[in-house]
Length: 71
Image 1 (tube, helix red, strand yellow):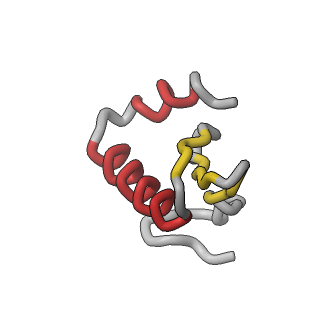
Image 2 (cartoon, rainbow, N blue to C red; image 1 turned 90 degrees about the vertical axis):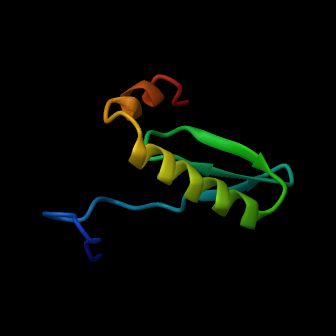
């Protein structure tokens, strides 16, 4: 495995972020929260990208708040 830009040390374990359930698409956040449903994989990918942009621009403590909703 290789590191991504800005990462230091050994790369973390990565898993598939997108999955389909009952005909709908979802993505899983790093905090373990499933977001969806989306009608198409492409819609889930756009939603995920928007989510990453949002997280990048918000309070650094927000991911800890999100962890409260992890399954």
